[in-house]
Length: 607
Image 1 (cartoon, helix red, strand yellow):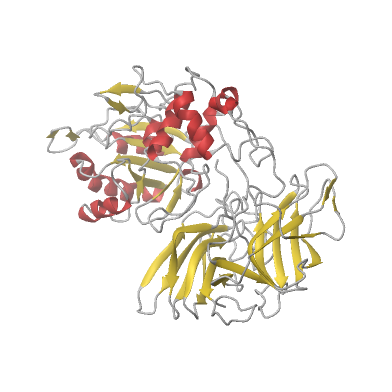
Image 2 (image 1 turned 120 degrees about the vertical axis):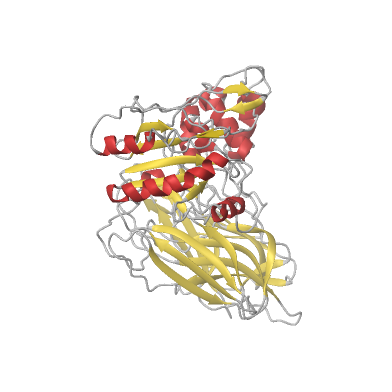
């Protein structure tokens, strides 16, 4: 939904926008705040519930469609609710009773004011044990299900993804009152009947808990969302740069009519956190160009879609947008350009191996560069481009083809290197242009060009890409969390600008930690749900100093199970390899270290 500002990869890059049809909801105003709608999925409709994904308060990723449980029970909660707190022992006992029958219980905190740390403290004070507490801080899940009160339970059969019970755990607790004991065990009875293959006799009861307050996303008397004033600006800010003519989105948000056609798709891609594509855990670090929707944006889009995507009044902002004319070189005319010796012919079908085109660097003298722009010729079939160079005085990056200089993936926008930094390119350096082509059913011809922008003088700092790499991978067949790690030493004081995890289709998660010289450790970036389709480079909001003697530790995991929808072959043991059906484990970092005034050209950053 938002253009990828910076991307970097070891060898394979992909961008894929996946959209699915979700559910719709209805909304009502109450006490000048937005009350939740009536339930979206009734216990008798057998409507398939939408997929969703959330992090728990530990930062672990949970996705409905990737559970192995036969039944998933959702219990909606919020910090401070006495009924929710008193229900925790009941939930733990229910899970114990039904664990051997494949019943999972997930607590869902849907108070927008409760962040991860607040949820952690509540879970510690009122012990949840090993019950996962998922954080629905944007309230997308509660809004989608129309949950109005905490302590509501929703029991989902994962065979057909339908709801078979919805309501209270039992009849003991209610607002401001409590019986000595429960006389009706609604949820327990529903579970026993459903698991025995019987009809659930009481499939809907009234939940007793604390009212959940939602964002007031509309001031209109009927609560109607304004397409022109509210929806279109969100689409313009987060979607149009990709979803526009000539860009990577599979459709264009070019008018109200086009947005309305896709309105029902919004709920599931937002609930499943596929769109907008941003995978950094918000609990660690601050980054530039964050693509995630905030709470108000989330609820505005979901509410508008639920209302039937009304047109409303006002000019259509999407139709009024005049896209700027295409510019060959967005950063201006390069100082020198490298191109293929001859055009590359791309067949219409078949599996294509990587191509490595050798070119001599076009600079007639040694040069310090402030930017490198890659301009593919046939964007329809160029999957990614990786530029390496064998430069005088610079060591190889481990590929055998030189040091990594630049990367292009669909949607990447050319940017200059950080202020005060540059990359050295020696005269006569051999360039290796790695081309990964896909096929689109038509014969294509490509002649990619690379533009180099020279700095007027040697910069203060030399920019470099370092990496924590583990090539000794041994991923067992069917393993849902085969773990790996890698370390890279910081030998000189340097400045860290960005981090980028790289795994392939079995990649599941990765975390970057700084092991500091004083013995402490700090998390730099956590990606709890890695998506191979998005090779995001996470640029720090503020560059960070890393002292000599620091080590950067990357830990991560691979999901080689049948529950991974991207898994090429769960029955196969997997080793390191270049192709996407093999695996890699690389944690990239852009760093720079200060150059001495007398330093010879070619001195580079930390290795």
